[in-house]
Image (cartoon, rainbow, N blue to C red; front, side):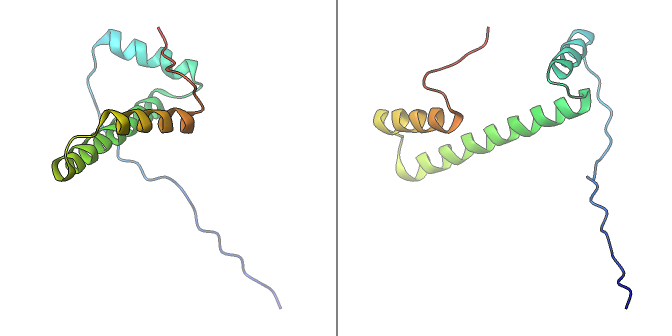
Length: 96
């Protein structure tokens, strides 16, 4: 008895947009993408997604603080320590 195999094509859906950038910014994005082995579009997509996650986190903290009051110094310190642990960092690492 023959079996028919069905494969579902898993392609990412994309919406094409056109944006205008200052030449120096476009060149900087080209360099950043090349340094990470990425494309211009993928770099912009990843960066925008990261920014949206940060904004959502800030909003969530603001909502929590509106309901429960400001975070204490101890809570902030514990949160920073936990974030560093999750990122595998023992101290603040900043690039110049």
